[in-house]
Image (cartoon, rainbow, N blue to C red; front, side, top):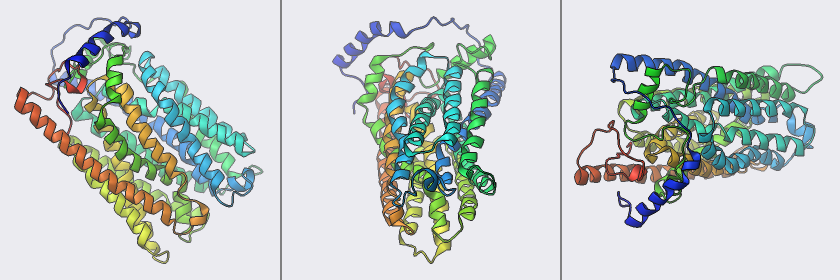
Length: 496
């Protein structure tokens, strides 16, 4: 692929400048401040205190509300409102309903999130999914709980894809990996915490069924967090009232490292269209497809899979905790390593292979070898959570502009969420206790993701070297004019 656009492409880009005016707000002109390392470290610490713990808390309950359907399955939900669901087909539809909405709505949600104040946008999403998750406790048939699951997917589509872009407003390429890793590790913490909570709720003896308590307990806190978000999270750097004027100026200067940000809430339709034709984004989506197939299966079926190893329903809930904990620890370690060595591709290659190996063991190990099968779930969580965290830190910075990210992120994430839909259907009850079909499909997808990650990583090394050879080496942190060509700008360099 040529690194420089054709003349006709450039003319098309010029023509777009007039249509972009309707998306622009008036942003204050920031004064120039010298880049003082001590002042910058102080700013980063301030951002860390405001952003990372808050987003971790939000995502903890997002993931709990997304995945608690799997815990509810072992607490009698199918018997109470699905007429027993002997084939597991209705439960598969409930698991997939979330992802149907997530795939459909993340495109408009991510694009138009740029037009709104970020802390209000995120607050609305959090309050919404918390409310609907709580309302699941009032459902009494398949149709009502299906609509709840679909609506939770709608509200979470406003959050997950947009957060990948939100991090890039405040952190540089060298900083973002560990922050996203810590944030995304919350998903594994939620899996572990959800298992512990479900274990405790299962021992509540009251006239309500345990799964109804579970939805109430996990939905209400998200509503409270949603109310508090506008007072905690900062808006975009140039508009945030939580930063002083010197801090805003420095934050904007940091955004310009390795590219040129779209200051103020602007949208370039030319860059939006460029994302539609970028093969690298689709490769990213393919790698995400396999990991998300595994992720949805973990959330919805891991308690059932462990239950089929011979453990009681309550103990199966408890035994989901260690694999999730190891997956989160692996993610945090590799996020720091990938930042330290400024490389995302190699960890992606290694850990997709690790995840595939875990599923391979689950495929071939006999049901009598419980130790091997349980150990394999640790490899699966390590591969799944580490790869998704690395992907969220890797792909957005390689798109070159905020507008391209606004379309590129939902493209690769929606491809990945289609994997989540697939994961909802490949573990029917009729395949118990070995679930060969689900394990084999996910194993193949993981290994295919490994191959695609190798191709994508090799291309990035090649293209960076080619641009160095043709245009000369550049400081990767220098400001690059990406306003017209996005990542195809001659001085832009991809994160390997």
